[in-house]
Amino acid sequence: MSHPCPASELLGISSEELGRRFGSLQARLASQWKLIQSMNQREQAMVVVPSAEPSGDEGSGTALLALEERLLCLLLLLRKPRARMIYCTSQAIAPGIVDYFLGLLPGVIPAHARARLHLFEVHDGSPRPLSRKILERPRLVERLRDLIPDPETTHLVPFATTDLERGLSVALGIPAFGADPVFDEVATRSGSRRLFEETGIAHPPGVGGVRSPADAARAVLELHERVPDLLVARVEAERADPRRGGLRIGLASLAGGGDEAARSLEERLVAIGGERFWKRVEAEGAVVEAVPSGEEQRLVSVELRITPTGTVELQATHDRPSRGGTGWSFPADPAYASAVSQDALGVGERLRGAGVLGSFSAVFEVSRDPGGAWRHEALQVELGKSEPSMPFLTLLFLTDGRYDVDEGSFRARGGQRKCYLSTQAVSSPAYRAITPDEIFDFVVRHGLHYDHATQTGVVLQMLSGLTELGRFGLTAVANSHEEARALHDQAVATLGFEADRAVGRLRLPDV
Image (cartoon, rainbow, N blue to C red; front, side, top):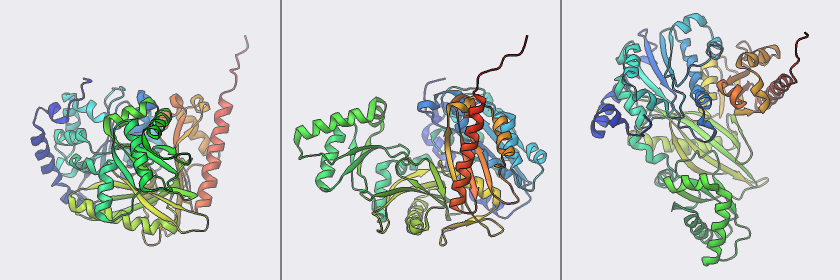
C-alpha cells in the first residue's frame, strides 16, 4: 500500500478520464452554492477530508491527527439546522475534543448538532496523506459513499486539493470546493512570480532554476550583481510554505565574484541549510530572492476565496514579524492592509479568469525604515486553506461577522470590532503531563474559555498533539489587538503554570 501511485491508477482509469470526471462534478458546485446562499431548507452536507502531507516531526500518527484536526472549526457550521457533516481522520479523535467544539456552537443544542455529525476514521496512523489511505481501500470508499445523504447537495471540503483529493471526489461522486490540481504550478515560487509579473504586482528580484548549493551560490552572485547594495538573500524551495522564511544568507562580507567567491558561498549555504533542506531543493527546485532592507519587516497573509459562481471574496488579512514571530495577528495593520489587499484581489481576479475556484492565500512581505512608509512585495500564492485560515473561520462562525476590506476591520454581527492573536504551536515538554480534558478544566477555572456573551476568550486547537508532542494551538479573541495580546499571553502563562505543576514528583500512597 505504500507505493505512491497517482489517483487515476488507484481508481483504475486514465488520468484524462479522471480529469474529465472531476470537471463534470465541479460543474455542479454553482447550483449547490446558490442553494447554500439562499438559506434553502433542503439538507446540505459536506465531507471534510483534512488530508496533510506529513514532514519532519509530523511523522507520528498523533502528530498527523493533530494536523487533521485543523478543520474542526468547520464543526461550527453545524449551527445551521439543516447542515450535515462527515469528518474524516486517520485515527479516532478523542470524544472530549469533539464535545469541546460542539460546545462552542452558538444558539444550537449540542446533541442536535452531534446527531448531524458522523466521524469517519480510517484506523491507519501511518505518516501518509489521509486521502491516499481512503482511496487505497475500496470498501472504505464504499462505506463513505453510503454515508452521503444526497450527492446532488454534498461536496468535499479538503484542506488543499491535490491529485488525491481529485481522485476521492471522483470516487465519491461529489464535487470538491477547491482548485483543480492542474493549477498547482501557480502555487510554486516560480509560478507565483510569473503571475505577479503578469499582473504588475511588485515582487522581490530573484533568480530561479536552483537545484543544488552550487546553483544557489551562482544565483546569489548573479542577484548581488543586479542589486549591488543587497545585504541579505534567501533560498526558497519551490513548494515550501512561504510563511517560514526560507534559508537566509548575509552578504555584507561578500567581496567580488568569480569561482572563489562561489565556492565560499556554496560552503556557507551547505552549512546553513543542512542535508534535508538541500534534498528538498534537489527534488523540487528553488528560487534565490532579495530580502528587503527595511529595519522593520512583517509577513502579511491575505485569505481569499473564489466562489463557484465566480466571485472573488477577500476574507481576512493577518500579519506577524518576518523573523521570530509565531503568532498571527488579525486583522493586519491598516497602515498597509488596504494596499496589500488590492494587490491580492488583483491576483484573485487573474486566478478567477483562469478557472480557479476555492480558498487560497496571497503572502506578502512589508518593510520600512524608522519613520518611513511601508513598502510591500508579493512572495507567493498558496492554493487551499492555510495556517491563518483556521482561526479566521473559527471567529467567523462564532460571531457571524465579516471583514470590511475598506475599513480593514472585522465586526461581529452586533457591530463590535473583533481582533485575535493566534498561535498554532504553543509548546512545552510540561504539556505532555496533561490531557485535553485537563486543559479544558484549566481554561474554564481561570476564566479563559470563549464566552458568547462578550464574544471574547480563548479557543484551543490541534489538541491531539498535547500529550505526545507537548503542543497545541490557541486563538485569543478580544476587542482590540492590545487586549488580544494580553489575553493570549495570560493564557499561555496560566496554562504553562498549570502544566508545570503537573510535572512534579509522584507521591506514593502510604502503606
